[in-house]
Amino acid sequence: MNNVRIIPSLLMHNKKLVKTTRFKNPQYIGDPINAVRILNNLFVDEIILLDINQSSTHLPIDFEYLKNLASECFIPICYGGGISSLETAITLYSIGIEKLSIHTAAIKDLQFIKQLSTHFGSQSIVGAIDYKPKFLQGCKVVVHNKKNTKYTLIDYAQMLEEHGAGELLVNAINRDGLMTGYDLDMLATLSEKVSIPIIASGGAGNLHHMKDVLHKTGINAFAAGSLFVYSGNLKAVLINYPSRQEIKETFC
Image (cartoon, rainbow, N blue to C red; front, side, top):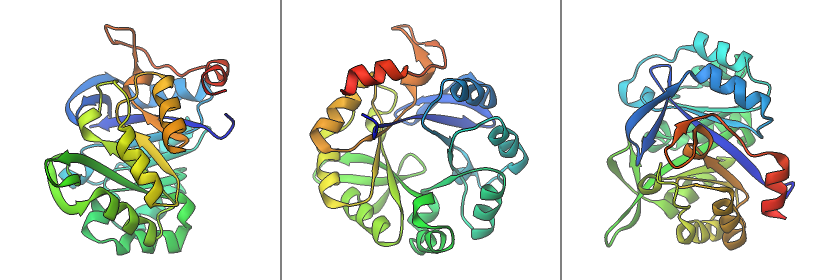
């Protein structure tokens, strides 16, 4: 149980905390900085913060805003969104970001992953993968939430590992926001094909969904969004996180 990592995944859009369903229709949840403060007090393992419009709009990253956000947090933050240069990465680390999640820039040039891992160490570089199952094509890697790439999930995951990514954040687009469980079969296959840690994302509705992944695949890191920003069947907005006792009872 001590090795299990349960990670709130926060989506930010125009400095607003949002939640999507299948990567569409972002719904306003609240203020990202306030959410970070609450999660900080709930003793979460770490936080993933993804700015979902940075890469597609090519807007400059607001480093001052992220610095203010990071200053409110005393737990590790992994940030993703619009990271496309070594200089940007250096600035993010300097303001308190511990890990970088790289997606669009790696799709364009996998050497960027190698450059970052060489400079900062692979342990701080997360290769992000958004994917959808495609009929007769297996699982295809998707960029900008909708555009298919030339890569299949397994091949791309292996390339990220080869180029120095320290772990993978694997997002199942077709399960995002549904809270019906993770993509167990795909995660089981992927866990046999790569040796670096995998963070499963997309579909978590309760801790037992995470336990299912652990037992079937050995993956022990789980990201979730809806689970930690909603409460109850009506999905009332409530930033929350399970107690250590709840986690212990579920996984032991």
